[in-house]
Length: 211
Image (tube, rainbow, N blue to C red; front, side):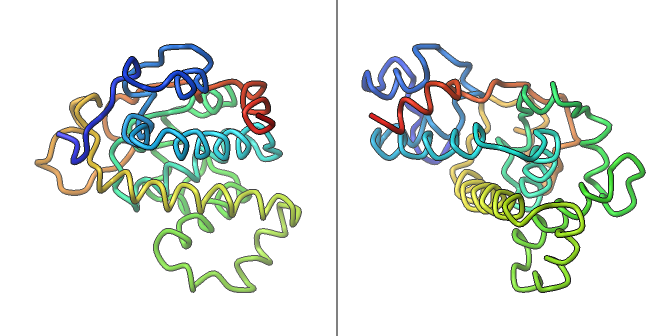
């Protein structure tokens, strides 16, 4: 049972429902939005920011999903670990790559560029003061400074919101393995994930920003 009440979409105010494009996503896809809906204006603002992070991306969807999932593991956010975004799956993310996140430094199917980004996200989630000039020099080998900023903002979003979501404990609509408390610590590579869309379209996000 989630520690705060999950508001069904039919109880949301019209502007919040409209922010999702008038669609009725699955309960899993709505995720944290079913709790942030208690404060609709803040929920819409979060949605706008998230969609700006996504719709203005220059980095690959697969890469950003790998970073998100490794951070989700350290956060132990079960709702974060249980999902895969369809955009990343379309960009080549498969469960083999997700399994590589158990030991990303040793995984042969991850590129050096992916390992550098995953390491950066992991450090931000576990020991942010270990990120030093060496870390940024390694990132510069593969990414422009604009892309490093993009990566950092995405990782920071995943760390902060994922930790909050972990405390809210929204697991009742997830696959059984992510509900099972017999294992105190699990990874995104365990169990069958749920593939979800990424919410409202980029076009709708642009409209929300100007409204």
